[in-house]
Amino acid sequence: MSDQPSLQSPGPSRKFLPEVKPLESRLLLSRQVSFPDGTSFIFPTFNHLPRTGGVSEQTGTILGIGVGQPTTNSVQVTDDGQGGIQAEWNGGPVHSFTSIKSTVIQAQRAGSNQITFNLTSPRTSPTAVAVGLHVPTDAALPSEGAHPVKARINRTSGVAVQSGSVLTVTVNKRPTNTVEISNSGGGAVAVEWNGGAVHSFAGIATIVVDSQSARKDLVALDDVTH
Image 1 (cartoon, helix red, strand yellow):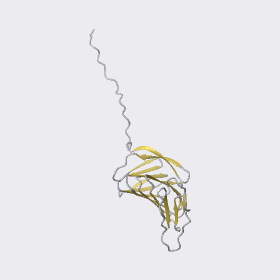
Image 2: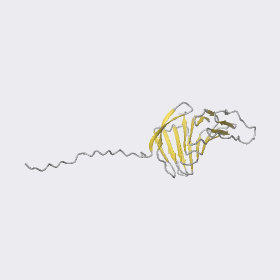
Image 3: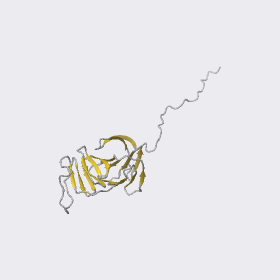
């Protein structure tokens, strides 16, 4: 019998090899977003955003779009109210999605971001303004032919101004801004920002969200029409 120890084949490696999935390096976080209509969703959020262009990811009926250019970001979303979404960001191509109920836009790095939602069934309506938590939407109506209402922005909140069928929401809270929008169809939308009160508007075809000063913004739209 030999005194040499027998050679054994090495056992299976104990090194953990995680499964690699598309966008795994970017979609690692999640955030709950509550909308004015009372619904709430858990949205996956992007952990790492590219410095040029942007990224998107559809998870079931939820669409996430992330932009992270260092100077400015722009996102345009066209929503047909039936789950069809067309979106483009930072001058890139148009991307089409189906069966979407809620869309969340995540913007980081830049101090100036503009997110535009184009809704179907445009309507016309008088100008109205909602500032922070204090001014109701019908409290400042201009006379016929007057210039659109201008309102001072409260740094801890924001301002929403309706001019015809266009609603412009401007927020500049540091270091983050959140804007939640519910689209009930037929031009009826409800908006809340930075944890404030819910403001309701009628006759809306286009919603423009301008964020200023902050480096992290989250803008979300929920369709309650389907």
